[in-house]
Length: 126
Image (cartoon, rainbow, N blue to C red; front, side, top):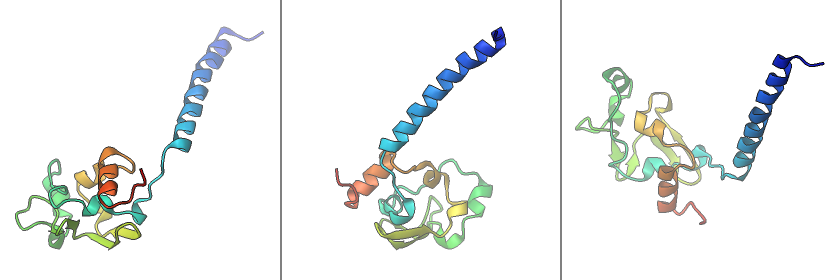
């Protein structure tokens, strides 16, 4: 006969399995975006890549050639971040990915900012 601890463990495991199955099904229906074949967020607005929460040590790691003259954010060529290489919507890469600012780290594939930028570049079908 199972001990009380065994029954409680089984009971607590079931909600965890249900939650995991639910999360798995959400991922199956959510659109997947590959940042390296997009780059829309990095070429959306010269006002977007602004420094706001970075500390001096973080900012010091970003090569000077990629920093705006007024030190407020990333240097942009038009609306495109100067650290972005490649063709938007085809194949792109960030030249400073490991040291990119917090605003860049905050934009996640499929979030509102991502979708807004993709829409601007005609990369959304709906």
